[in-house]
Amino acid sequence: MTHAAITGWGKCMPPATLTNADLATLMETDDEWIVSRTGIRERRISHVPLAELAHVAARRALACAGLDPAGLELVVFGSCTYDEQVPNTASGVQFKLGARSAAAMDINTACTSFLYGLSSATAMIRTGVVKNALVIGGEVISQYMDWTNRNVAVLFGDGCAAVVLQATDREEGLLAEKLGCYADARQILRVRGAGAAYANLGVVYGDVRWDFDGPEIFKRAVHGMAQASAEALARRGVAAEAIDLAIPHQANLRIIEAVAKRAGVPMEKVFLTVQRYGNMSAATVPVALVDALEEGRVAPGALILMPAFGGGLTYCSHLVRWGDRVQPRGESDAALPPCDRSALEIVKDLIERKAGAGRSDRGLFAARFAESA
Image 1 (tube, rainbow, N blue to C red):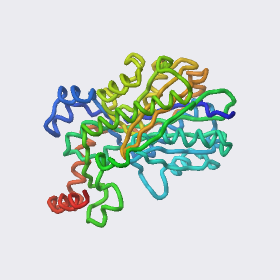
Image 2: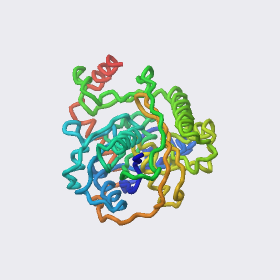
Image 3: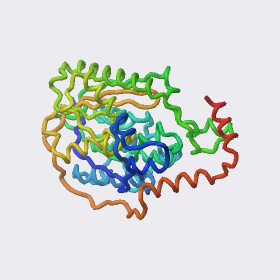
Image 4: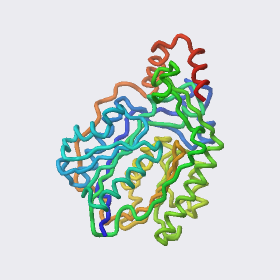
């Protein structure tokens, strides 16, 4: 049987850090309020478009695998904050890499997009459609954030990471997964304004309002990730005790703790990045995976469990067997252009540009958003 081993990995994090103290200058909040409810202390804000983050992360992942971009056969880009929808953003990454023989596609299942992409690319390798693939998970959520809404503005950050998959006869890579969706409750996590449907209401694309039912999201997230983890483990006959490391979607520390408890994985086996990056949606799992490798938390042959939950309401859990190599084969000199502004300055500029983009009658827009509920 053909498997799809993870042979390369790389991340690209924007250098500008937005702290809880920074947020307190924009809204009524403070560090204690945010940390006690979410576990988040800071997050990154990008000074470049998403495709630039993805290009650097991809270069680093390919160098790590020792794979020439010219030999790449598939690019799968998981995100919900693409620079463009037509053409897709994956094609832009393909072009920048010089991977002219590669197919390219985007996948949007919100926070689960990277893992849904991992499933898709693995399936194509298993069935012989391609022999290798680059799977990216990245977001620049700051561009779509409602910075007047404390309930969501404190949660999210920007970032990107990528992995390379290559065909192998060894039992490595994705061993089992469970994918699902609570579509009956999709309205409880919605970004109104990010879509063509809102144009008919006179809403300018990018002028967003977030629907975010925190308590219900918490319940659905915990249930979905725990259930998917149990099913993924059962499909391989693996007990929770056999898991060497859990790398969950980093939405909220309380959610992570509840999922770990239900899944039977002790917190000392759970890798956390939520405190330093916040919720990066599709980027959280791949960035955490790269961090875990860099910090020596992934051992050769390790069994890794990766559950996630996102808008839609999609959920999943993936069981991965790591290979023998935990060190890069090579390094890339790809890097972002310098950032000459602080994260707070970038956010203030976003707020000012949105406020000045022809939105003189905020009441009218609010009414039209209400109509779309």
